[in-house]
Amino acid sequence: MKLSLPARLTLGLATAATLVFLYLPLAVVARLSFNPAKSVAWPGWSGFTLDWWRKAWSADGPRDALLNSCKVALAATVVALFLGTLAALAMARFVFFGRNAVSFLMVLPIALPGIVTGIALQNTFSRTIDLGLFSFKIGFGFHSLVIAHATFCVVVAYNNVIARLRRSSPNLIEASADLGAHGSQTFRYITFPLMRSALLAGGILAFALSFDEIVVTTFTAGSGFLTLPQWILANFSRPQNVPLVNVMATFVMLVSIPLAWFAQRLSDDGGGER
Amino acid sequence: MGGRLDDAAVVTAASVQETASTGGGASGPSHPLRTVNRLFHGRRRLGIGSLLGVPLLWMLVVYVGSLVLLVISALYRLDPKTQKPTDELTGENLRAAFTVWDNIWVVIRTAGVALLVTILAVAISLPVAFFVSKVAWRWARRGLVVALLLPLWAGYLVKGYAWRAMLSPAGGKFAAEGKGGGGFLESTFGWTPGYGRVAIVISLLYLWLPYMILPIYAGLDRLAPSLLDAAGDLGARPLRTFRSVILPLLLPSIAAGSIFTFSLSLGDYIVPQIVNQGEERFMFGSIINATLGAPNQPLAAAYTVWPLLIIVLYLLAMKRLGAFENL
Image 1 (cartoon, rainbow over the protein chains, first blue to last red):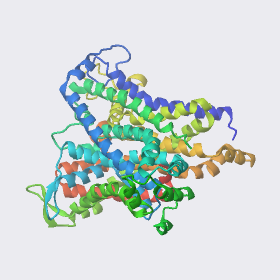
Image 2 (cartoon, helix red, strand yellow; image 1 turned 135 degrees about the vertical axis):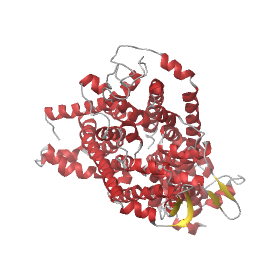
Image 3 (cartoon, rainbow over the protein chains, first blue to last red; image 1 turned 90 degrees about the horizontal axis):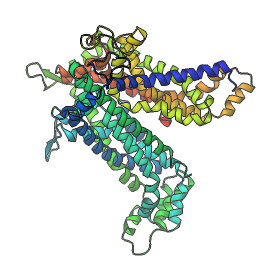
Image 4 (cartoon, chains in turn yellow, brown; image 1 turned 180 degrees about the vertical axis):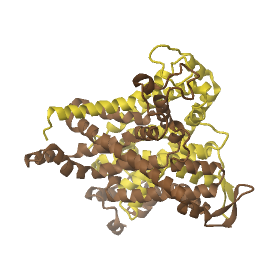
């Protein structure tokens, strides 16, 4: 298709404008984190201080919240990787009745609005579940957050691993078997190395998803446990804490964007085995 | 045992052989894993079950189970004194959710917002993705895609908050604090839509736009350039090519993207909290959240049946359009 020069220019400008739209707000927050005034009012480019970064570093609230977020995200990632990988191996390998339903089920937790998932899990965790022989209550805290986060992170791990399995050639597994490897050897020397970078990429993305989550978190954290997004949500409208919110928001961007970029690289590489 | 191979997974001819040979030609005589291998050999159900069992059970018990419990919890009457659900069954909560016009109207408005966000996202993503995949210099393409997608990971709250800083009107809540000026837009261009409905749509669009760009870009990337050339050779102008060739082929990709833009917007109640001013009943999510905090768990549960129904129907419709292969 031949497009005229004006048409191509228009498309290029639209792309450039979209990039500005995507990055400008992030740049504004980053700038505000160095702003001397306690306000979200735009200070222009004059006035610069590192005070808020120093304060945020020594303040207990944000640091504890950050630590909590990391713990939850790490635990949820481990569980999600385990569940997602198993599911991906099954789905890549077998065709069976109900296969579509399973893929539907995997997507559901991220497709349903967080408020539905959140209230549903909150309701379950707060109940005493009576199984006849014994009854138990899940309750709220670190563990309930891990269960909730793992549930919607599974799909990220699953997607990454299954994409890799689909792209890699079945000949490799065949060849391994022809050379006399049994199932576990094939897994150890062929399947796992094939999946390794996809696992890392899926793990990073699951971590980022959990680290960032606020809605389900609000409903399943209980009162004693505060994650970083919860801390930000609780403080963004308190004028005296606005500078710290700016710092923490900038910090989140600085950490998660490069990580996501790295994950992207990982899932692109290593796909060329075919 | 060989007979069981007949019902082995027939994905490709290769994978049949794989099943046959991983078990059959397996290890040396005295390997301890041999028994395990033999057990799995050709037993498809055992293979599927051992791999899929735990994840499936998790999703069914933890997730689907919770959703079912949630809907059931909507059927109980609230004790007005203790504000806790009683054991008494009632249809009142569901009736309130589905027959009170006030609520239905907010649901319609919320779905309208979600639809508007989706349409705007498609309108932006189509030209941008087209530029990146077909017009931009080849060496710049990867970088551009990554640049368009990375903001996705900046953090939901961070991005919502960023628009609070962008849109802040002059003389607002923070005016007394700093220099009294407005946010970035106000002080740079002298104009801002301020907080409110427009701000909610902009923020939601901003949050979910990359989710639409990604599948559309992937769809365009798969689209053979020869199809576009053929359309041109047959005399179609670019717009006609777009309408008759590109758009129909992109439909599954658009459907895939819309799952995120539509459903994530539909249930949102945090963005209205960040960039709204005063109007508490604008989005349905805010109503659910307020009802839960009242506290009236059964009524809130009844309200969640709305988004639950809408999204499940929406997902099924998008599945028909082939969205799930493009996620």
